[in-house]
Image (cartoon, rainbow, N blue to C red; front, side, top):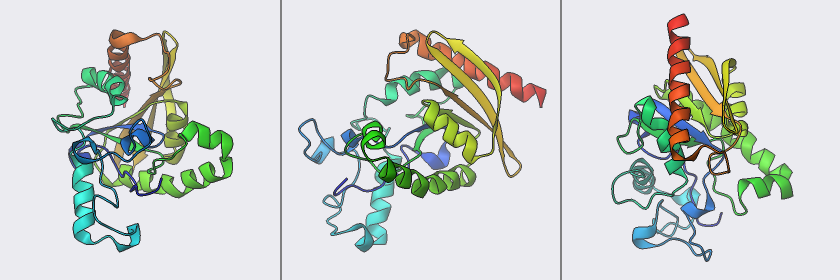
Length: 232
């Protein structure tokens, strides 16, 4: 998307032990309802304009540091957080993790925001979508390997399947809640054992869960992860 920068992560990834995983950043992270770039206090991420840069290639270390600092502060009080994350925050609550507290962060398969949305891009421009995915997945793998994450929560089947494949994981438990079928996998990153949970329907779609059901989903995943840990 013109003028945007790749969103490497949302929140304080260096301090997080849990990360949620989605497809790619929404265009609403950069654009308002009219399609104009977010400005001033409404801006969620730095852009080439906000950094007074002519291109990504010309960014200085100082400008890059500023962009990363903004990413780390995404969930801090007063920031204009995209409402999409409220569903995942409810799942995280019974797991003892929180975006705001810095114990959880968010990652994406693809770090680039796209306009049209990812689902439209896959349908209308499948070759470009596939190229973006193949280009960006190695960076996601590097993040998972480089930071001390112990649990990944994948919002939807595409995210779950790609992450499990990326880590050579294996599914160890499944369950169902309303319209949601959830799965728990385990993988190893060197000596570190990592749990990967996910479900079939992104939570922004009709799932039948409601607010309490999203919390219950987190409880079920937490119980399954704890039980799997006790069997190791």
